[in-house]
Image: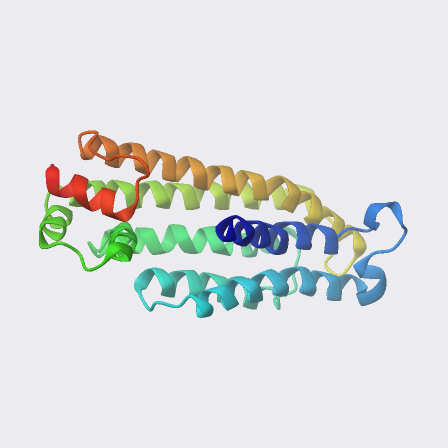
Length: 236
């Protein structure tokens, strides 16, 4: 129940709130945040509140690790980029910084032969306690190819979302920055791109799960808890 409420809160603050704040006319009332704060103030509010919320959750649940650091840096980049007031193609590219950061970090991790998903899977498995040496042996040997392929999937997901986000916001956010037209276009773009981003994330992790289920020879069992993953790796 608590987990469901946390997910709902996350969606309300990071998705619904920005879309409503950027509206020119809230529910046909004739009022808007732009009317009270000005278009620039409404834009800053729509960007900083979600970024602040994500950062707050990161520090509240902090467990210093490469994964935690990357999520925190991504939230910081999103928050700081809101102070760069621009429009047109520059804005579209800037507003894709989160996905571009994911694509870049995964690509760099592959180049230095420290694939990012290796840190992700180890952090997930550690929820159940210290890693079994047999699990670590699997990850360093037979599981290494699965880790590399999973990292490639995440990189492709980041590139795909960044490309789509840039194209959508370039074509929909056509007004000059600091105008109601800019905010309205951004609101429409967000309403379109947020479901696309969530869908792409779901597809990417579904692909990763299928890949690992194949690599573990179908031994992974519901409810797919960390302990079940560790058990499957030991059995292979």
